[in-house]
Length: 241
Image: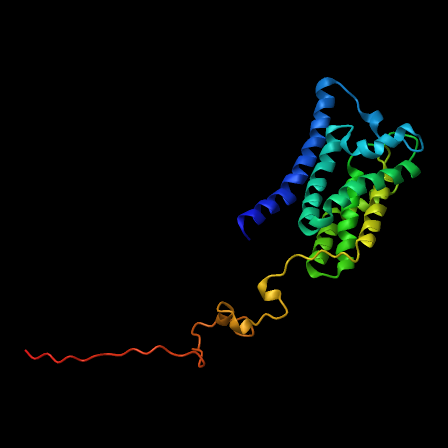
């Protein structure tokens, strides 16, 4: 990996999610600092005015606890998205916000729905189902990790807690699943290492020659018989004194 590729990696995987999250916190700080309330810019279902919330609601949060609970999974999952699915990462985020917001507008209760939790559910659902559909071991492992970390979030797609927009969560879950189906043929697989290539011959690897077939370390390696051994010539000179 050269220096330019390393810079692209840092920009795509860390900087973009960080800036996105920073902008959300700046909006919340602006509300608190100057006494504004942007809740009426959220999604208000089945009203023309509420349509603006489809785009604006992910950046509006009702409390410090609300924004805190969304920040960590949003940052972690967006980093995973940009690392494993970089070519389609922005499509998933932008269209995920729009589609999940529209679904919320269609099925939501008559109240303002705010917060980035809908996008979080998009990322959870997309990452999980996309990895399963890919049948590629690294992406499947990522899917299992997502289930381990955020599997309990599935319960909040049901109306089990008052004041929580389960409609937004359910909309995000369905949106991520649909995206995983839509991008099913466009499987983005991480670049393989040299030893993962189909034409790779382990016998030619100088490092792997130090291990046998069982993975045990070989202290003394037998010289390659096909390789020409170096010869050393000595010259004897008689001492005439």
